[in-house]
Length: 418
Ligand code: GLY
Ligand code: MN
Ligand code: MN
View 1 (tube, rainbow, N blue to C red):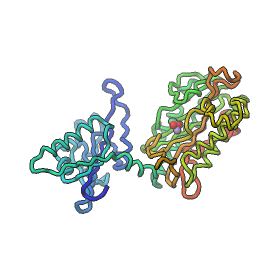
View 2: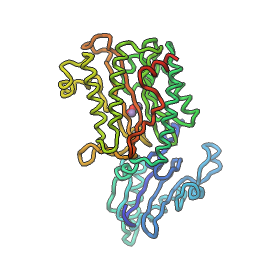
View 3: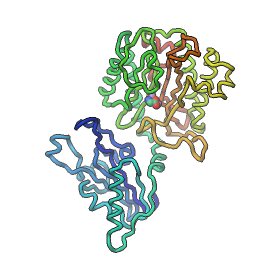
View 4: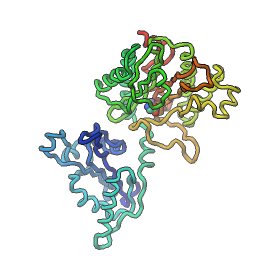
């Protein structure tokens, strides 16, 4: 954002209602959190470069003892300066009177468009006010979508961000261990979910997305979150559950044998998935393209499915035709950070992005045999397996943030049996 001809304006996430007058638990907007660390709704950040050394200005709710008795403490403009490192802070109630003047004389405005209708309308109001002011004020005439620039920054995690992601990963790993202990034959999926949530909340984290606790054929539903089924001995149990710590996400999947032993077909698919995942993790290295992990996973899965005769016609044919997508219908990973599916371009100049130190990706191949797929022998039908870890790219090799949680078949069976 060059010179004093530009300004940047970003809003906090609004409070969102769940039903009637009950709100969802508040979650700050990831971009706003990245730039401010400020945890409240009804706030706006303005970055005003130049003019000396430039200014960081925050608009936020004023202290209000009456409201605070109901909704809890507010930071207030005075403390915002002391605690959040902004140069100046004003009551958000006064923003219409103050911010347009701060934008005057600047020709370029960086902001998000089309995210929050209310903020878009507010922005237009400020510009209208500037335009209608007498004396020919210079009004921003270039509007730059902030997303791309900011999201390039967010793609590279700092050591402090990586430390939070390690913590989020370790909590999610501990949650899976607790979940496995609860996953006895006869237990309901929601009881297993309760064990996950118990650990996350006990460690000060929240789920980074609604957990999937999928027993038996439910494991074939990629984003299953009903979690209402009951586990039976001999089922696989697919748990995809991440923890969010201080707004940073983790995202782990493991597939467990209820009762402690995989059946032969379950084990065969598990081992192919595991081999695919290890091959993919090996490709998460600085200098390798983003898609190399997926390509490696596909190669192992196609070879494995051909060997098990789930795919016909040889690996080369199955790879070319895309026939394997019947059983492996998704990609192998995504960026992860403040958002589970984090921001950042996957392609640059129409080429897959090359991995660099500080980037963090998930690696999550899976095999799912639909329960109603009559083209395969019945022993395979309704088995779903996915294994997912979070992997940080380092200057020398990679770091599996979720390595705490075992995944080789022996260790997985032992945990379930124990
Ligand atoms: N848990 C969502 C995902 O794995 O992408
Ligand atoms: Mn994921
Ligand atoms: Mn996941």
